[in-house]
Image (cartoon, rainbow, N blue to C red; front, top):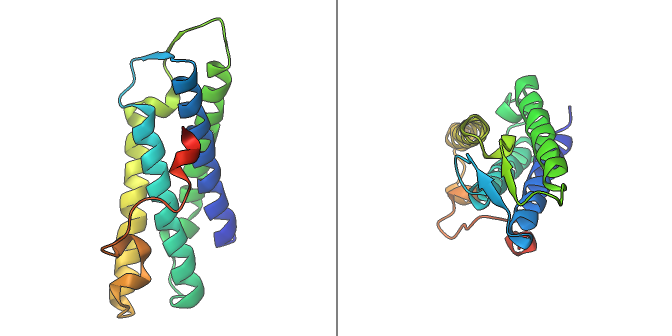
Length: 158
């Protein structure tokens, strides 16, 4: 699998989550049983995208031989599952007869912890590569002191 494809998959997850958040806000929907708010999920997806972008750039420019976390089949599978969950939630949110929704998969603790674990693994991997290849910290965007999430347009969510 190509690193660019994987990055686009992560970006697609972000886009659907962002769309879901916008729909929840726009229609003032009540979400029962949510582990966190949709904005938190969108932010985590945005940071994951930035970290994956760092992996793609590190692989292309510095560490071609390194087996990055993002290149593992289980990472791509997890992103596929996240995309499916977000799309399923989007379909459920389209029901205009409801103002209260329960059981949105992308707002459960399992979904959030999966995303946070992926983020941790990717960022640890990027840090390891940066240390191993003795790269300056600013080569990894999320390690820069001035970094603010995200390179994605957060304002597009609202």
